[in-house]
Amino acid sequence: MMKLSRNNLLTLAACAAVWLLIVVRIANHEPEYEPREIVAAPSDVQSYARQQLNALQKRSFAEQREFCGVIAENANGTLSTLQVFEGDIASCSYGDAGRVGLNPVATFHTHGGASVKYDDEAPSFQDLQSDIATRLDGYLATPGGRFWRIDWQSQTANLVCGEGCLEQDPNYKPCPAFEPEGQYDIKRLQKRFRETPARC
Image (cartoon, rainbow, N blue to C red; front, side, top):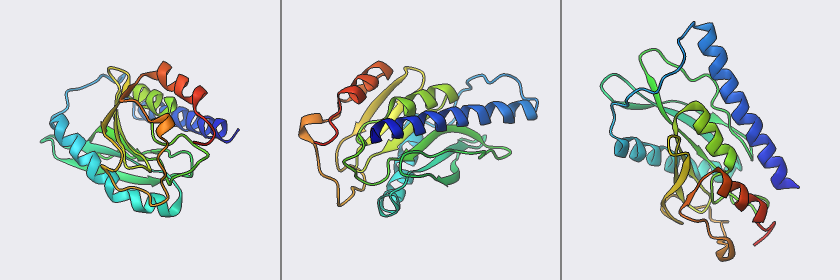
């Protein structure tokens, strides 16, 4: 029952993020969003996201909450974080993080501290749906120290590096019986959610 509550919260957060983007664009009379070529190298964006997430892990564990943010670049491809937002135990909303002269290129978020109540070691299908809707790649850090990349164009979540490659929650206990796979699409994430045991 708790896992269902987490997924409901994530769905609402994803919908809120998409709604906010639409409202901001209408208010600014912006044309319909078209994907644009990103100046920064994909490896640089991924490395930057990894640094940001690793720096947030200990706080995320200590406060038992998710943290999220948006990575942007300027015209020269220099990367920066627009703002880091505090979420709760099961969700985080990016809010309005726009800044003149900077273009969003990716999102990132943590999954809080280790908990037997949630399947935190893989992205949720709401995580994947949210990045597809905003047309931005997403990066995720788990309590076990896994680092994921959500590719909005291929609509897949891909494990960049496994357990312990980022800061790991001291309370994390691996679950060998339900080890995450290396790649998921929405259908496979939904299947994982249905089959995830309440406890390892």
